Length: 243
Image (cartoon, rainbow, N blue to C red; front, side):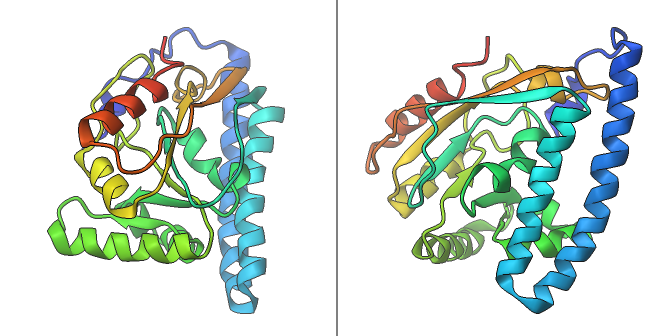
């Protein structure tokens, strides 16, 4: 499906020479490292699952380091407690929070658009790590397969992560949550922890800006609430940094 961000990216005319230089250096360092680490991950896959996961975590940490030391982007978290047996519902403004998942959470299992898992090599690594494909055109059978996979990961003690808006959205916008979120919440019977993120103004740009990206964790929401209530509570909480 089209990505609304592609039509709503911030203007880049105000980028400074320093921002352009740092962004180019970041692209070279991070994406160059990504190509190498994907190949290393495929080799590690043949050795052991533990070593494979170490490489994935290193890749996410490499991204965080490139953001910090090249782009001068730091991260602050408010109210975070790492745990399994929960569904983290995260605001999605840029690729930053998606790439940051293995660094930030203990063995997270994310729901990802099926198109991402079709990327050569990267998609193979993503599936092996535990990404669950979201097939919005697949109907009831695809939804059942997604639930089965999610329950397997829950049994392993891993936290689930979802971007309930379904795709990246520009900072300052508050789209309704995708319909599938409430269905997953009901069928998985897990508590939800909503997470507000404000990465868009710094990272969702061609020429990225220095500054601080904030994560704000809301109060845990128990399972079993009516659809209207869970959607409203999550929608409010994930938009707390959306000024």
